[in-house]
Image 1: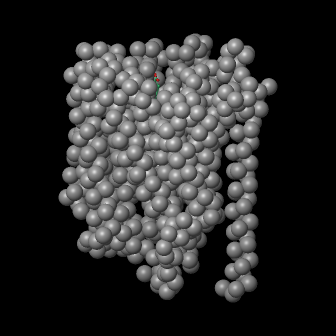
Image 2: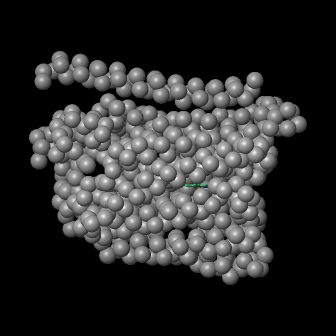
Image 3: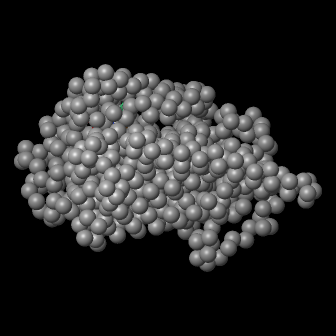
Length: 41
Length: 530
Ligand code: HEM
Ligand SMILES: [Cu+2]
């Protein structure tokens, strides 16, 4: 595997990892804020 | 030996000094730190339980004042659950998940470092409350208002500590999910994942769904106390029972967050020492997932006595019973795995079988308490204390300890002292039953929980229980001794370590080099776990 291909694979992996962080992170934060919001109204 | 491993040996320089640990992004080092932290917390929480058992050795007030006794009960639980059990599970995951799926490390190594280092910080906050005006939390680990709001200066520290613990475990959970979803070696399909990995994916999703709810609940406590809100204050139009609903909506999934990793461990151990593949792999995966799903619909079995509508009581009773089905599937699968296997009984296997027997005892008392009308008798008595200590101590802690014995030769490269391991198992098993079984009796006879004094008719069993407790506590020092001895040397372990062990982690040298699987291995049906 040449260098270029490796970096592009690495980039692709980083992208997928960030996607997981963003999706699951938003779910967690959403649950937290949503719960408080739900009970305060 | 795969090419990857030989290649790795060249680059096997570890960073040195304290920086290796402080700035670590290596899953093995972070796993080790989690496990060591958990072990320390196990003894901190254990010391508190020794204070409790000393006080309860005889009726009357002997050693500590009631306020401090209540702090011991409360902080013991918080330390054990959030400081010992959860970090131990995450530590095992950090060490083993990348090795089992053929990944070079966790997907998000820097976040991994952060998740760990938040923990000592959070526990410094929590334990510092002992030195504050008003003392440490004393209203129970469940933090029910209005009682918890009476805590003095320690209150915001408790709330912030819980927030930090939640952030740490959510980051850990996201990391595990990203690792398993994105970093599996070629050929490592989901249905080839070892069950320990499956158990952890499911646990991670539980964490992400449950921890924010707890954080939301304690945030509302904080605003109730300091910012004039009345979420849980009846005088301001709020409802204190609402906190109980929020807490247990987190709290029951939490008990599965604790137990599933331990189930995962014994799903690795039992096939190894039965020299047979796990029976019913697919049904195991689905059973674990259904336990997790159902765990969100049973929370109010902790609140049968608060005065719910009858339909509510019935719903939560039947929902609770229904969890017995997938749990039964798992127990029967483990037994079927052992059936006609060429079994041997090394220490990890002893602990795993201990889990089967004694977790089931706790499961049965759980079923009893899940029956609404009879729970009116059991609620807030020592029967509850017996129940959850059976599921937690010989159910969860034994599973974790079994995992430690199982993987210690892989981690250190040395075999542990089998004689001492067996001694540890037998003393622990006998003493844990002396400690917790009689609690069923005094609970049924009406002894309330969380009380530093009691009527004299409970005196005999309480002193027997305390003796069991002291022996159990002391026998855990054997574990420490075994671990230290094993780290320092001993008979060299082979790569496979156990005759019946299969899976990627056992193809690596023992101990594995600092960096593993930098070139991903190829997984086929033959090399897959099950
Ligand atoms: C997975 C392992 C389990 C763990 C770790 C666990 C843990 C606990 C804990 C910590 C409590 C006490 C909470 C408190 O402080 O008030 C508790 C209570 C309870 N558990 Fe479990 N449990 C487990 C399994 C079960 C099962 C299988 C059932 C029923 C089928 C069950 C039913 C109950 C009920 C009904 C209560 C409330 C009793 C009361 O307060 O009156 N548990 N459990
Ligand atoms: Cu529950």
